[in-house]
Length: 107
Image (tube, rainbow, N blue to C red; front, top):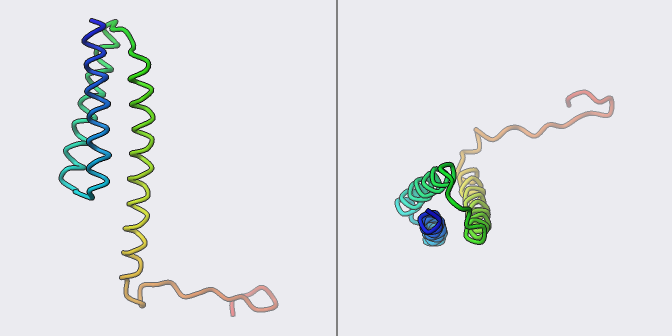
C-alpha cells in the first residue's frame, strides 16, 4: 500500500510539472489536459490516504510547492490577459473620471 501511495504521489508531482510546462508554453489545450490530470491524480492520492496508505511527505511537500508555483503563474497570466483586454475596450465603455469640487460635491 505504501508503494501505491508513493507512486500516486509521484504521478501527482508529474502532473503538476506538466501543468507548469503547459503554462510556460501558453497552450490552452495542454493546460486544460494537465489540470484535469492533476485533479485526477490528487483525487487518487486522497483516496489512497483515506484507505490507510502511508503519507509520502517529501513528495506531497514537493507537490504543494509546485502547485503554489503553478497558481502564481496562472494568476500572473490572468492579470496580463485582463490588462490587454482592458486596453482593447472602446473608450465609451471606460468609466468617466470622478472629480470633486471644493465643497466635496461632484463637479
